Amino acid sequence: MDDALSQAIAQARRWYWQRISAMVLALCVGVHLAVMVYAVRGGLSAAEILGRTQGNWAFGAFYAVFVVACAVHVPVGVANIAREWWGLGERAARGLSIGLALLLLLAGLRAVYAVVAPGSAA
Image (cartoon, rainbow, N blue to C red; front, side, top):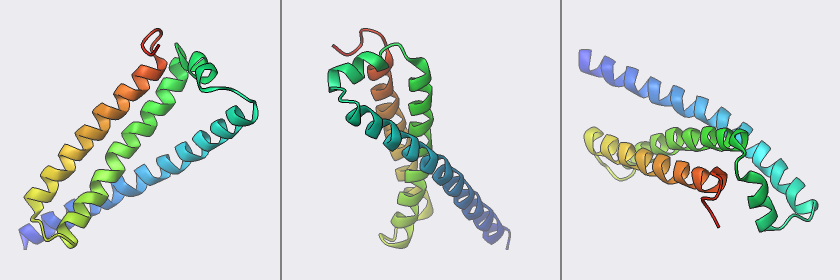
């Protein structure tokens, strides 16, 4: 019974984190799309957009939040798929989830840094 209870608590936590991260992602996607439409309708080129993002740490902070939300949301869903569809055990699904979270976090934050850091992308 104790093991079943701990599994239920873990499942509830995963559900909670995926739903909270989904809310953050919905907000981030909406802001991202609005900014992209504004930039494209304003006639900005990719070089002009990059010029405006360099050194803009508010932009970087927003996209860092976006990356962290993705790094929380996606691995939870992939771990669920791995357990339910692929038949992976809890330990293997968790390992896959952690690896994917680290990959998303590192790649995403590196991309944000490359776009925001002055002189990093030329």
